[in-house]
Structures are given as structure tokens and as C-alpha cells.
Image (cartoon, rainbow over all chains, first blue to last red; front, side, top):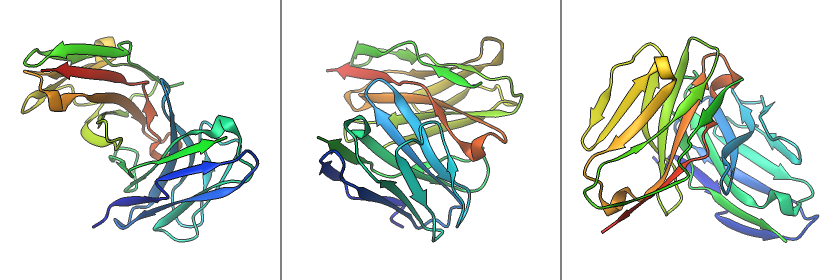
Length: 113
Length: 116
């Protein structure tokens, strides 16, 4: 099992450009999450999904959109990137239930110039 | 509202010293879960432990131990006889039953440096 994978690992964007980050999991997990990690801030939830076709906003959703068309994939989109979105993005998945551990992907380091 | 506080931003110890990482949480819910994750320099997040609010037993796993005290809302993590490989950022996190479908609320992390 590959677990949780993220594509790409690194990306540099110019302000105003758009891009999509892909998260894939092969553990048949219902729940998937996107977090961002900024220096000294810990991880903060951007959006999450409790199943195929469903998405919901987290703590810091502005400037991002997500889609969960297939159970195994969770896409994070930036329509018009801003320097404030420079961060490390982590995807995670978990079995149904808030008591279950989340399995994290390796992260995507995004720089917006 | 829920909150996790890790007051120690950075800790530096010499190999073989014991070190305790503090975690204080806030929640009004009676059912919740506490987690510790490790983030080594390579960047990935590694799950270490989960504890539910009804289980206050301390846990030991090798050199790692956890002390959960509801009376002080704390879930502290101790590494005994630290090693260089323990150098990492450690995150404490909280999940509330029924809240945001398992969303983890993270503390800001404690960076541990273990010097040889």
C-alpha cells in the first residue's frame, strides 16, 4: 500500500496563477482533509470531506476550493494564487469516526512569488 | 471552542537526557481524543499515540511515555534517555467527538533538538 500520496512535492507559482494539488489514498478511507502548515502555526484545516461527493470548509478555507469526485482522491485548487498561500500543504485520510488516527501524506511545498 | 497549547517552542537537550513536552488542551466536550504526532526533519507527520477522554491511564511505549491528567487538562509526553534520532517537531492535537468530522486541532508544536 502506498498510503497517502501527494502530487506535486514542490511547486513555485507566480501571483495570480492557478494550480491543483492532488491527494490520493489507497486505504479506502471515508474521510479526507487538507491542512496547511506555516512556520510557528502548527497545522490548520483548510477543507475536508466525509465521503465521495461531499466537501466542507475548515478553519482557513478562503482562496481554496476542493473536490472529491472519487473516494480515493481529494483535490485542492488555488484559483488565483497569492503570496499568503505560500505554505506546506498536507493531505490526510482517516476511517470514519473522529476517534481515528489520520494518516498524512508527505506534503507539498508551495511558493507563490 | 477547542484549543491546544504547547508552550515550549523549542527545547534542546543532550543525548541521554530525559525530556518532557507539555500539552494543555481546552474543550467543553466530555468525549474527545488526544494525539501526538512527530514531524522529523524530512517533513512527514508520524502518528505516535491516541488517547480518549475516558482513559486516564498513563501509557509507556519503549522510551516514550504519556501522562494524561484531566484535572489539569494536560497530555504530556516524556522521552527517556533521548537520542539524536528523536530530534523533530512534536505536535499535540485534539479531536472532539462529533466536531467537524474528526478535524484535528493542532498545537503549534515543540521543536526538540537532541545533541550528541
